[in-house]
Length: 75
Image: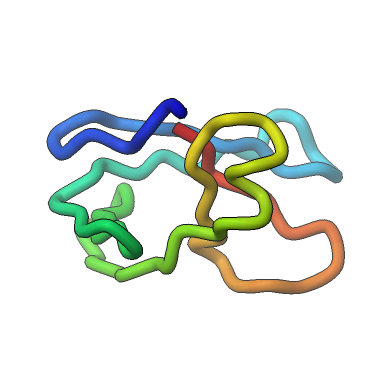
């Protein structure tokens, strides 16, 4: 399984507007959570989704929350 690594930067795109991109840097991680820093320096903690991660073999989080058409950040 591909996992999030501390210090690396990951990006995700909007499902509605392909030019809208969010970028996050992994500050730290545990077995079940990832601490991210966004482009503005805001820190947030996200739980790794086990169901989504098992589907494609990459850890997955939802930094913007869970809603219809929410973007997913994948390792």
